[in-house]
Image (cartoon, rainbow, N blue to C red; front, top):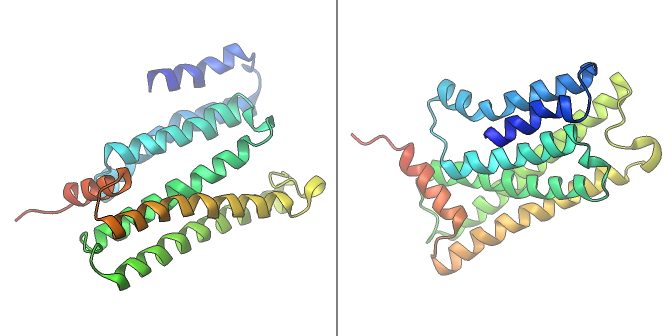
Length: 202
């Protein structure tokens, strides 16, 4: 996290952006993002595991520090890599929540397993759809063409949705492996840790 903040705040000096209000805004937002998990826990009393927080921090580092502040979005494929990872991470978080709600009872129940898959991918794609709607709203109301409508039409939006779906399939593969073998993967361990940390023992 020290390196994260050094790269964020230091970018104002490294890139000579002390007079760029837009860039300063990005830096302030980047500095605030790592606090979100802790504020979430404070408000909801839901304890996030170290794996969840680490995954969130790494994604924010890629999207905010590398992408927005250091301009990695100009590199072909960087945006698609992040959208793919978002599919993996969102699906994983959704599954962890579902695992918690079912109190871990998935391994021997085919119906729960199928519902878990549908719920996980459904929410993943709903979030992807919501994000693309947000980017389209930026274009309509602020003429900020984050979806590359003017030069790519619907290509950017559709490929973002597709790679997010493919990322979700990676998580689905971990769930399927657990159902078939009953062996824990990093996803299942994270789900069990989350369940354990948020189960009230009377």
